[in-house]
Image 1: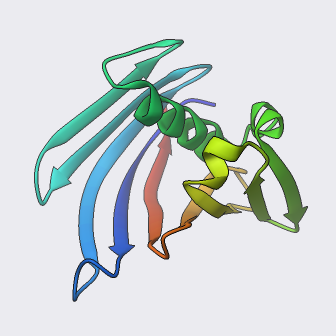
Image 2: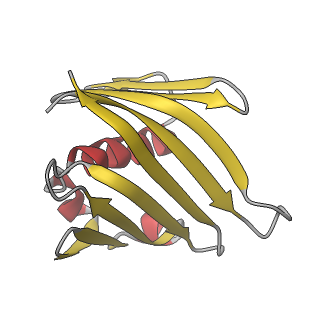
Length: 140
């Protein structure tokens, strides 16, 4: 399912006194195109089209995971994560050491009607937490 959405991202970190807030929009075109655009506080665009992208490999892997998460397709994530689902909440726990160094877990709340992510929460091993909420989702 191809769709567009807006998002608000909030990152809580021990490095900042206040949570950091970003806003933007995304475009997902099935099966493997994602455009992730931050509009506030600073413009920034990430694009991933198939296996090609204009970013470093670590960011590219993270964006691929986000792409799979927001589309509700978590089958590929099972290679790198233990996938547990209860109702509309999916928890991804890293299996691979390089991912365990970054994340303790990722929680995805799927919309019960569309099975597209309403919210993604990333728990980093350093204690930082990033919450991304999607809204104004519209099919393309």
